[in-house]
Image (cartoon, rainbow, N blue to C red; front, side, top):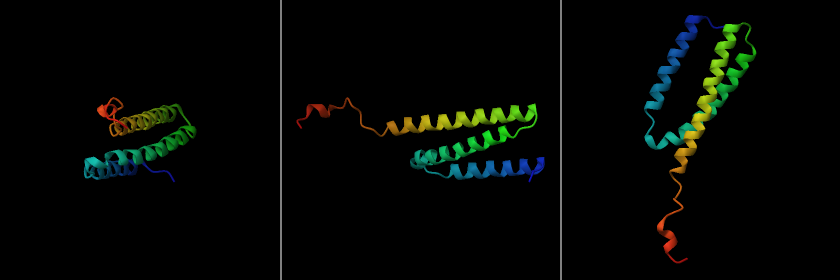
Length: 103
C-alpha cells in the first residue's frame, strides 16, 4: 500500500502535534525513563529507515533514505549519550568527605 503525498503530510502533521502534546504533559522527573523508552522507539525508526533505504529505486530516494538513516543514527546515539550523562548525576561522588569517617 502506497500513501499519496497529501495523506503522508496529514499523518506526519497529526503525529507531530500528538507527540508535542504528549511530551509537553510529562513531569520533569519522568524525562529520563521516557527518554530511555524513546531511544528504543528511535532504534526501531532507524531499522525502518535502513529498510526503506535498501528498497530505494532512484537517486532521490537514496539521498532521502541516507539522510533519514543519518538523522536517526544521530538521534539514537545522542539519546543514549544524554541518558548516560543524566544517570551519572544520580551517582554519589567518589571524592566525598565520607572517607574521613571510620568504617
